Every structure is written in structure tokens, then in C-alpha cells.
Length: 489
Image (cartoon, rainbow, N blue to C red; front, side, top):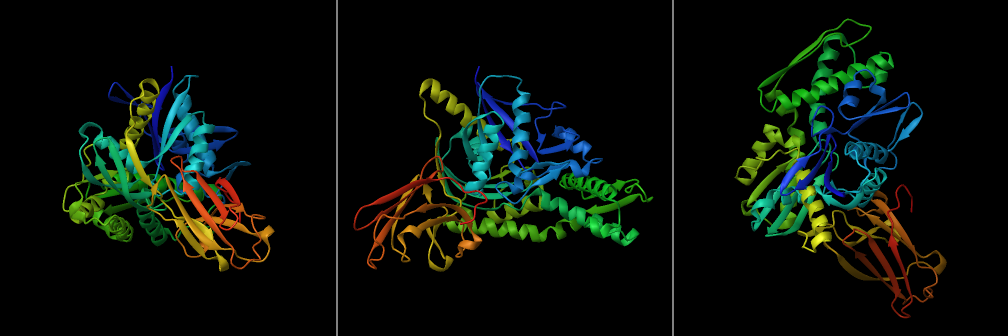
């Protein structure tokens, strides 16, 4: 029997959920837990995934990979462990493969996998590749904030403007959604793909490292500075990282926490102990909070909506449990945020609704929830001097098709190409190369009056179709651009 699931492939934890007769059912992993740590460990030719990988990391820290989602789509990022190379996509594939095997079935499993709304096209594409390699029939890659909004509107179906604040382990999104019955429209998105719970863990870690420098003069900021053996450095630091994450969570309900780690080093007797107050933690986290504030304020500005016009604020992701974040959001919007549902499961629930809707549609022809989304990063072409010209701007609704007319550059038609980039910077060199279209031969561009009409069509599957047409002759060149990961223009 075919199965339909929603998967929240998270930075810290992953969740898999299905919807049966209106009830949510979460896949259980080792220890009957619905949360699977998004981590792997490779040692002596054997792969370990999830909680067991995290436990083993205290001993085999050099063999451990976590928070790989932060680097998804980065062609330069890799981990080399005992001769095996892992890319971020490889790590995602292993985590998703573990989820697939947990079902213990050879039947087809259709999946809707979620990603941050602010992911680039390359990051979205790599997530889809990982899901397909893991053996899922990936029906759709779906934005996390939209999934959360659907999960909240599943029972009520109200007409509202919603702000979704999604702060996971390594990424942060803010989205402004408009709901009308079974229809969901994204009005604006913003975010930071390098900001999440890991950054708050690092605040506690740094407080610990400072105490160690002061008491025993050992600098654990890097292996080279520590003066320790590689194993001793890696194991000590990993023990501190694990404790930092635990105590961050405890500080959401306690005024102070104590970290005690006996025999922190293997070859030097040192019993580490530190007390950290919530006040000290929040003071150190003020810089991160300001980054969150700027993105929320900017998103509302792009949606042209005042905070008072937001009907509901929904919190998503475990990091939003942190009191300083909840208090800021409450004060900014002048209303209590909704956090009554399990924030760590909400995105998977929304994805499960979409996955189930696909299944029902295929069986009965019933309508899917109507979702109108927007482009998260601008798409455009390179002009003279490496200048970036935006054709499809971020926050543009799609599907969409836009045409612009440009004069022919250069003197050689065989070297006339359109280099296509994704990003917001005025310089192409600071944006992401997306692909190219060769226009050689469509016209005699030695005619200084010649012009070309460039059309960008972005479809519902997030594929970009580029057409270039000589205005005078009507000759055309067209291409569906595949994301050119790691290729220079």
C-alpha cells in the first residue's frame, strides 16, 4: 500500500508525519522518539544515524557530522572522514534513507519535504535530490512557514493575516501569510540561512571556553591553540557542545543552570564546572536578537503591513521557546504568539496535510489547498562590467513570466551568452551563478540598433525557462535552466 508522508528535514532534528483519517501519526525512531537528531557518524566503514550517532560523538568527535543543513547547496563544503567524502547533500540523503528504512516496507512512499522559505534554488534542488536518492517519491519541496500556517489553519480555516516566525537549529525565516479558507498566499519572506539554535548554543559554549582559559590556560577555540592531542581536543570540545545545547534548553524554564563535566581532558586532571544565569545568557544573545528583529521588521515593510494588522503570530522551531525571543515577539506585535502546538512537530504536520491532499486528489480529484508562493531570491542576467540586472525580483508571485528588452552587447555573435544569476547584490560576482543561455547566431549583432527580448518564466515547480528573441527577425533561443551547482560563469 502506498504511503504519503510529510518530512521536516531539520538542522537539529527531523520529523516524519502522516495523516490518517484526520489524525496525525508521527514515525517513531530509536527509543520510541518522534524526533530524529539530524546527525551521522562514520567509523570503520559503518554509518550511524540519529541519537546513537550523537552519543558516540563524545568518543569519536572527528567522525561526527551535525547541522549539515546549514551548508546545503554549498559546493565547497565537505567532510572527509576515514577516506570517505560527505557533502551536505550526502548527509541529508543518509538521514532521509534512515527515515525511509524505518518504515520497513518496499512499497512506494510519497513525500513532501520542507525547507526554509529563504532557501536558494540550489538548496531546494539539493534537498529534492537527497529525498529521491533516499528512495522517496518526492512530490513537492514545500516552504516550512507555509506548512506551519497550513497546520494551524487545518481545523479553523479562518481569513487572517499571519506572521510565521520559524527559528530552527541553523536557519531563521519570517513569512507573512494571508489565509482565506483553503487558500494560502505568501505576501513577503525574509530570513537568515546562517542563524538558528546553533548560534545560541555557541553563546553558552563561549562562556565555557572563557572559563577554561581563565582557570587552566587552555584555549579550546581551535585545535592549534589548545596544545592538546587531536583526540583530546575533539572529545573535550564535543562534550562541551552537547552540554551547551542541553543547558540552553533548560534556561527556557530556569533562572540559572550549572554545567559539571568531570575529567574534561584525558591527560590532564580537570573537573570543569560553571554556573550560567539566564540574564548572562540573554545579555550575550542580544546581538543575535537584533539580527532577528531586523529581519522581522524588514519583512513587514516589504509586505506593507503594520505589526498591529497581523491577526496571528505563529512560532515554529525549538529555538522560539527561548524566553527572550518570545518576549520580544509579544512586545513587537502587541499580542501573545501562538505556541500551543508542539513547535518541533508543526512543520511536519503541515507537510503531512499537503502529502495527504496529493493522495486524496489522485484518488478522488478533490482540490489541494491553494498555495500562492513567492520567489525567495531575485533572478537576473549579467550586464556589462559584471553588473546584475534583476528580471524576476524576490517576493514576486509565481508562476510568473516577465520580459525585458536589451541592446546586443559586444561584436561577436558566437560569444554572446546570457549568464544568469540568483541573488540581491548589484555585482554578479557576489551572487550565485544559476546557468547560461548561448545566443550565438540568432542575429547579426554588428547592427548597433539590434535588440533582444529576454523572457524569464518561473513555473510552479520552480523551474526557470529562459527565452531570448531577436526583436527584428524573431529568431529565438530557449532553455530550461538547470541549477549550475559549483560552476563558474
